[in-house]
Every structure is written in C-alpha cells, then in structure tokens.
Amino acid sequence: CSTEPPFDRHDWIVRRPKTGEEVRYVIDYYSAPDDEHGMPVFSLDVRPALDSVQSIRSRIAVATED
Image 1 (cartoon, rainbow, N blue to C red):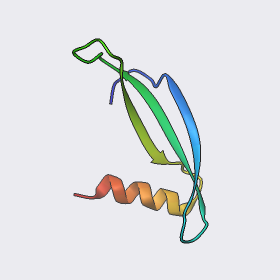
Image 2: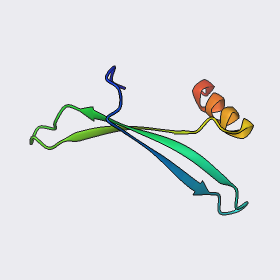
Image 3: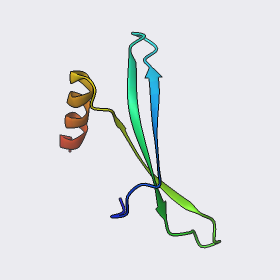
Image 4: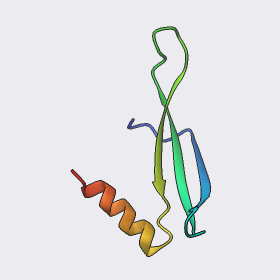
C-alpha cells in the first residue's frame, strides 16, 4: 500500500449465506500511478472491521498465514 492516506473509505455489511451472520468490512481506496494508457488505477484494502471477536480472529489469521 501507499504511504498516502486513503482517498475514500466505505463500510460494507456482508451477510454470510449459510449462517445469516452479518459481518462489517472496511474498504479503503488508494490512488496508484496511472496505467500505460493514462487510465487511473486504484488499490483497495479490504478487511473485517474490528467490531467482534470473530473479526479480530479473522484478521489475525490472515496476517499470520504463510
């Protein structure tokens, strides 16, 4: 990711199909250099919000996997 702060942030609620559990995700949008044709490019950082024990576990699991 860039050292610049995100230019936009969204919160999305996702409902798990099997359990019906709702999980909130945070999505940060970062600018990246334009592509070779001058088209804008964006980088996304998508992660579970830290508002439940399960979300914290999920983020730790992803951060520590090989």
